[in-house]
Length: 294
Ligand code: SF4
Image (cartoon, rainbow, N blue to C red; front, side, top):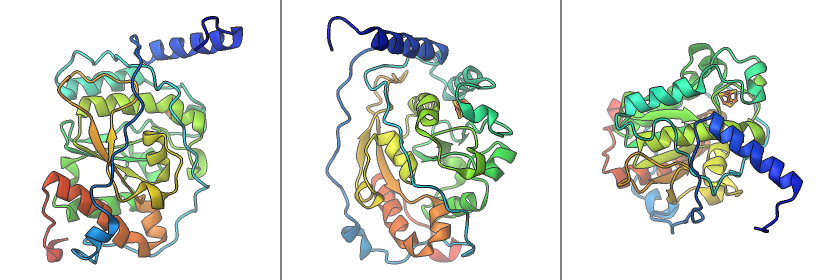
């Protein structure tokens, strides 16, 4: 970085710091780039063991197509968040602090584009497994909970097929307000909202995060690659710019699979999604339910 900052860069940095303070970030440091890890389980390795998915799709009804995914490469890769929750060891209390910090958020333009309410996240604050989607849809906006519509029902089936209950995991989205018409959240919206997701992850400290769909994967990993390249492996993941209250937590492993809404549109891919989930189950030591119970 040059010793003398241009006025434009100085203004941009000042604005960035002001924004970070607004959302509870007061401490900054440099960190190494995200380390990628070699695949631990290829699609081919899992294909033979369980050829058919254990979760069922409820119908083949078409959903509204979404635009091509956009993603936000975090601009604060070198920043560390010390949220107000940093010294709070109880994750329930820490998540409450983040929610209160979020308030009736107007930080990005999604607040004035028809949202009914903020969809913060739901589930076990001590979950070993966390799912991250793209953003709330109409049902989620109405109920204030992520993944409660048809895609949510499919996600519930996927969780159940893994031998878990919905309340065992934590579920959140990259953006917490519904984009109008279920459009893909835009880059500035993802950049503005994702620090709160990072703080949630740092509080929950999951062993594994499953990114549901390309938007979530690209935002979390800051990698612009097709799903075919993103899936089938684990990534080492440490939430960007966040310091967990637990210094012993060394981050999560992150896997990528298809968004349930995509699986509703293209059920042929559910077998591929099941392979992704099997990889996660193997790592977490989970046993699938007998097929008859799913
Ligand atoms: S999407 Fe996130 S940053 Fe934007 S208004 Fe909603 S809560 Fe705030």
